[in-house]
Length: 158
Length: 265
Image (cartoon, rainbow over all chains, first blue to last red; front, top):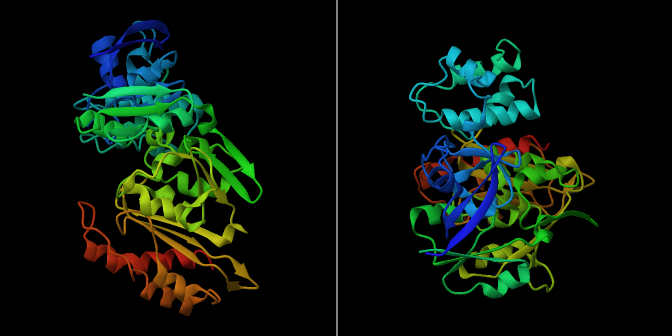
């Protein structure tokens, strides 16, 4: 199988690996670069567990060809927080019990971070809209919405 | 096994198409097949920057085939399409899914194409030639009609002349039970050139001739809306799928058409 070299910035660090023909970005991040934070849920663009940002925009990494990430800025949940210090969203998710099984959590965090970076004081409706492409089968969404709003309203600080 | 071929121009990509090749746009349709191992052996794509352009044109806007729903939402020239683009997929899909891809998205997807059909959009194909009505392309879409370069969308005369409704069970991001787009240009209050388009009510976006006949040459009022609603599903053969049965779709089509038209009074 032909291999194509792909270089990208992953959470601020230049990384490179070979991508297989037809390999999606999710698989490339997990197997090629060892970032296991984006999850494989459906492979169909329905669940949002594989959400990452590419040049600041949320994308479904399972529906993106790895080779099209060449030269681009990719951010995953593993890039949230600084060393041992968690991102305020991660703190808020813990405080509000916004994760049960945890499988949707990395995708939820990426979508929530993208929202707050663009709109630091979103309304509840804007939060619901921002996570509408991320399915959660445990929480019923309310704790997740509460956690994101808590950060937006400044009730959680890192 | 899938091989990916990338070309710098749309013209080169178009020449490379042919048997056993699929064109990759935003990826939200084709990559599902790649992941499932059911994609054709060759995936053709292009990095042609002209596909990402939005241009205001005489009476409307020209959208490159590679323009994403998010780009439409960020464009002032395409403001009349914002209520439609906002209802496509979730945020990630809107950042990826393209105008051109939406024209080929299988049932129950393709809500944006439904709006374009009602608006009387024309399609510019790779290789030039005069733009063809979107209706023709939609009819041929299963038969490899070639690659789309751009879509020319006429701007409705006024905001009240165009309406769009997507009906889904899950909000804000749900797959269509059906979607309806209505263009009702009025001259002195009389409808001239009514166009009603339906999504998820057939194999692809379809015109609704029954409702169009009931509206054409009339003044929009409760009685005319009731007549259009009564003929809503005429000529349509909606599918049964996991979201709704054909019977249900036919049964509620008039109800939703009525709601849409009442908002355009």
